[in-house]
Length: 123
Image (cartoon, rainbow, N blue to C red):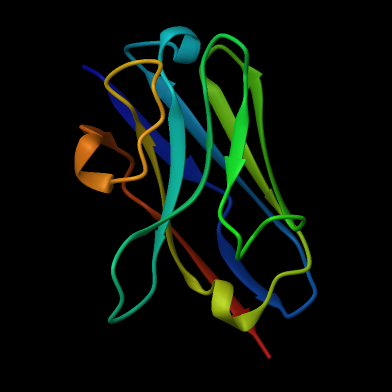
């Protein structure tokens, strides 16, 4: 069974850091792009960052560029290091697997999702 599990969320003060991890079971990340999305209360799910398989090209939304870093630990773990956190980063964060090596911005293109990890940044 293919599954994604996020970990590492929590409560942090503004300016602090958190590290999210996304671990896959039933498949490896070798042939798939992986994305992090987030969803704040009352808002649509938005893309935060993603990494292509193969050359490992990374992408970031403008709102997190320079503060968040996506990386791959091994064939089945992707991390999202979040620094200089802001209250507006508060959301549930999800990792998702693309159907291929291609990165998509639309959440509906992703079939496999983790259960979500809550991040709360206090001011």
